[in-house]
Structure formats: structure tokens, C-alpha cells
Image 1 (tube, rainbow, N blue to C red):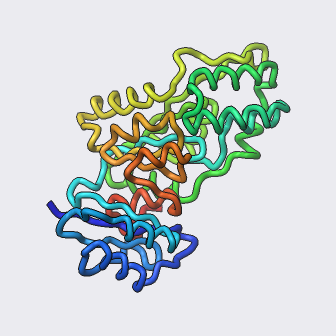
Image 2 (cartoon, helix red, strand yellow):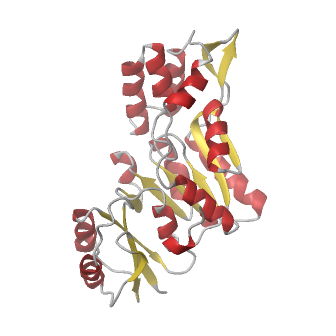
Image 3 (cartoon, rainbow, N blue to C red):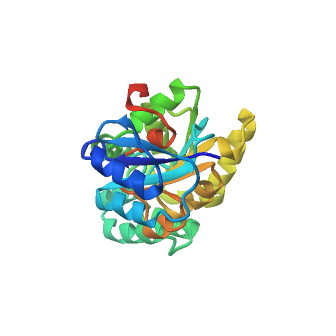
Length: 292
């Protein structure tokens, strides 16, 4: 079996040089590299899987680049399964709502601990939603309009995978009020999330049941692949929090994107510098193949 190592930097940097790529190729036992995007991403063909790539990893990281090593066959996936908060968007929606409700610091603290795996996700969600009781429901649209920004590379990721026959699902521990809007703007085929219960124009401080957490994301992966006649190996999943670990480990390629330390430590594919287009380079797409 042949392997490929992929070097990926953030596209805004464009700082990868041929010298750096050649040095990393040499450290891995490779003979040459091939640019996927000049200064941004390169493939290094390998005859065998390296026994030890710590030196190459450290060299890549010191040059603000990610390194992914995988079998050369099967790297192109047919399904994208993506988390939303701090993955497809740059914010945590519940933190933004909490800030508007005047309980931002408390909720941010709980969110950080839950995403790092220090708290049970469902209990943490109930506690945070409870602190939003009485907030005007109109604030949701205000947050969407004024505070939500998309992570760079997301549009290219969705457009390119779908242009090549891929299916995209947004699966979030957040809320449908946000996932439905984000899914529509980015081009996801479907979205799944929790529901904020409203009454008389205000949030009740409750969420619909059952709560979509770690196991529900795994269930979504299994449901979607079964429906499409595929297997988990056909999936590339991306997320950053502890509640994403189930789907990241089950997917054929699970990508921890700018992830919490406890999450990154449990994932073989970690992107610490790349944006979401890194998922395309991981699959072997060149920049010339991106759909706009």
C-alpha cells in the first residue's frame, strides 16, 4: 500500500517554500513533492507508511503548517459531516446569546469546559439554556445578522465536494435557529441540531428533547451513510469539541480543526493552521479543482 503525506498552511500565509517541502519529504523518506497550491499545500508520495514522523511533524509545525499522512487510496470522501460552532462559523452561538442576555461570562466558562470534555455535554447544555430564560426570541435573528461570521474556506469546501457528487450535513450540538440559516447560506444538504423552546416571544430556558450531543452525531453519521448506501469510511467529519469525538473517530477521516487540546490529542488528523480548505487538500484536491 502506498501512502501520501500532505502539507497544508493557511491560504492567507502562502509561506510554504519548496525548500521546506523538500526537507519534510526527506524526513519522511519521500523523494519529491507535488504542489496542490503553490505556497499553501503539497503532496508527498510515500512508498510505505513512516515508522516515525515526529521530526517531520515538528518541522511542519515550526513552519506553521499541518501534516497529514494517510493511504493514497480512498482519501476522496463522499460525505461531509460538519460541526457548526467554532468549526463552520467562528463563534459559539449560545455564548453570543448569553452575552446579549447579560450572562455571557458564566456561559462562556461552561461552554469551554464542556467542549474540552470536562463536563457532561447534555447537563452543560441544560444549564446554559436555563440561563437564557426570558430572553426575547428576536435576539436570535439579531445575533445571526450582527455577530455570526463564517470560517474561511467553508464555501469552497461545500461547493467543491458537492460539485464532485458529495453530500454535506451540518450536525450541531447548537440550535436549529442557527443551523438552518448557516446550512442554507453555505449549501448543506441537511442540518440537525437542538431546539430552543419559545413561548410568547421569549425563550423558556428549555431545549427540546432528546438533546443532540455526542451519540446523536454518531447516529447521524450512521443514518446518513445507510440512507445513501455508503459506509462510515466514505465520510470526512470535522469538529473541534469533545462532543464531536464520536463522529471524528467513526468517520473514515476525522479532522480536528483548531480543536480543544483534549480533542486534538485523540485525533490522528489535526489541522492547527489550515482553514476549511485544508479538508479539500487532505482529500487530494488541488486549488485548480476548487469550485467557487
